[in-house]
Length: 316
Image (cartoon, rainbow, N blue to C red; front, side, top):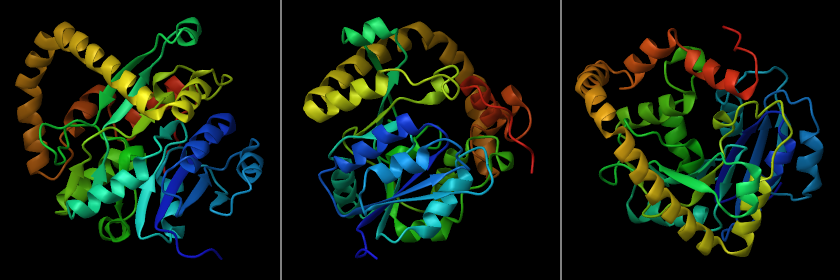
């Protein structure tokens, strides 16, 4: 058994071994090396086990669940159960850590005496392969709140979180998608916030996401070149990549603000009061909106799965 790691990283995965390899490589490129990576397969049936073993790194372990859960809650709960570190982090199998992510997050957590910190996250917008080859890619920036503390109206990717290990015990396990109108990750962090935990944002983005949920058929078609491209850029010049990505996200954000300003203003007239009522009743502020848009609990995740090319979740 290795000495107790400083941070345990839980990585849930399902049948995307080629993409998974890039996520693992991003962890291994961290400036902080006293970590353990717990890869949890959601009953994987491909060569995921062999890919993980191929790294031959004693800090990396793999466990494959005997039954498919269909989303992150089951694998993440198993990973948390096995975690031994003083700190706990998560990484989606299609996301990438910048080399300074873990070190910066732990430093900010301690400096602010927070229970959990998160990084705003640079998210690659799908572009044609020929544009990517020419370096003509686009980014959005997610996870930015009006202040540096958590706001449940802002989506914060789980890949961006780092927390004290005891917070996971205090809040409890991730709930299955069928138990909430929002995704399991947003349900969990909302519950952490409602418990009184101190949640604060890092001053700079330190995670890059290439989300499968925004790429039609991502689970049933061979992976493209996006991950390989960004991993190489991150390896060669992480600072330059981040600066270029931030510049792209600034332009994209201004374009979207101009295009949708009126529509968002009208939506807020109805949405904000409804969200406030939901929050006062103990529900996530987006629960009414997603209930109206998707129907019963779990259907938001089913919509994402349909985009990915997967079947609907089996109701529990």
